[in-house]
Length: 248
Image 1 (tube, helix red, strand yellow):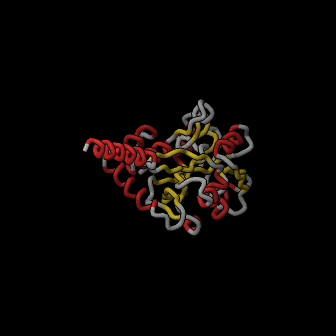
Image 2 (tube, rainbow, N blue to C red; image 1 turned 60 degrees about the vertical axis):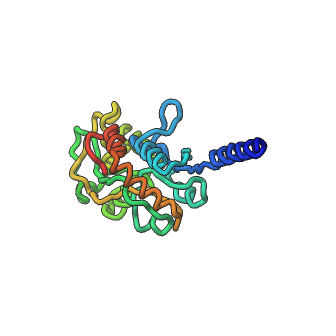
Image 3 (cartoon, rainbow, N blue to C red; image 1 turned 60 degrees about the horizontal axis):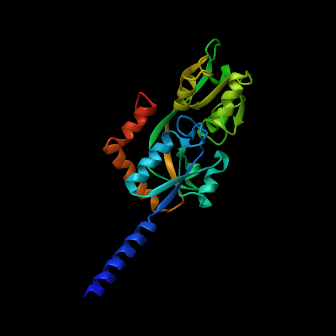
């Protein structure tokens, strides 16, 4: 009988160890160059609103998650090449992107708004922008909006939002069109203090979602986890850490 107990105990320990070893792990894809939503701290760690929301969703799904960074231009191909399992990097839900990936329900809402120097007149209608150079990040809603709605206006596209800001402060741009909340963060910085929002938001219906590969059941799990972090207050705690207003 003692031998049977020893065998049973050993089997139980082995099973428990195997279950722990087989814990599900997922990789989240992030650009890490779009503060305050995603960027790297002084130690090279990926931080920001997107990262914290992603971690909260993983905790709700009871999975281990790691971060994989990717350049923005190739971030959807990287998802479809299975370099990561889901993409949480402030991506606008668009019909064009829906042809390549599936999106969760929106995890925040965005607006597009111009910024320009405080001491210069800057009107945001098409006629007033003729002859000016406007910056936007490549492959974003802002860049597409400029090309679709401001024919004849010179638009300079950048690989990262940070590079657009560098050209604005160096005088190579007259203004920038970008996500309002990204601009809001930059305007608080030392570099951004001489700049301000100009005009009203030009787009207010931009919804930001988490992307997964087509027909991936992970989408439903992420949607459920998102609903749970909103209901239990986790989302609000993260939101309030970055913004004095709700972006949900």
